[in-house]
Length: 242
Ligand code: GLP
Image 1: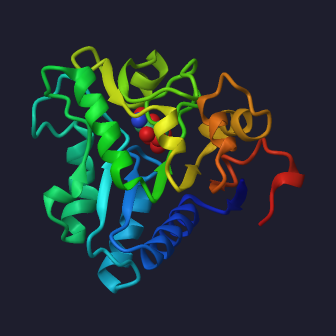
Image 2: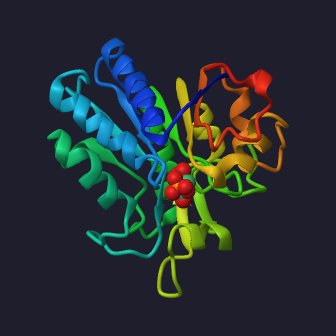
């Protein structure tokens, strides 16, 4: 693991965007795994900025979601697909067909999950961006998710629902890729910003605490962790190279 602690969330976003741009310059038709949430919003703006000024090669870029809420109709603005469409796909000038996610409208959800794992695996994911939940979740792999988990339907933890602003009428289940699929990406970039992530980050990268889903990432050969100083507050100084 390479851990970099930066001053601010915008520095984290810039560093992550530079890693994506570097990967895109080395790989034709980059297959990029993205994560939704507050942490990655500044990254998406930084990626769009780089796409517009030519620092990020977007020809042939395809974008893969980690997860999607269940029970929302096509076009619902709460869908992660809608979020990524408006934060990345449209402003980068990519066709909608460049965005891939699990098919939550399928009659056979188990089959749709297997199809999505297959689609991600066919060409592989070159670089997977990840955020971390306050409870250490990655994608929607909540605590207790095994490292060999694959795409499946999950019940969202109460804490996750609250953090995502989900009320009584909002979805309480989601389709998520599993930890195993995340670990199959060639390169992983985990972002953590703000004080609310300090405990989860320390649990994952210092203690390798196996109840923290993000701890499974430590087994990956090409993991970069980018944290701002608030999220890194509980990491031992010896780990922190600025
Ligand atoms: C969400 C997503 C994750 C994300 C995490 C953190 O629910 N499913 O992919 O990384 O929770 O979200 P945020 O960045 O808003 O704290």
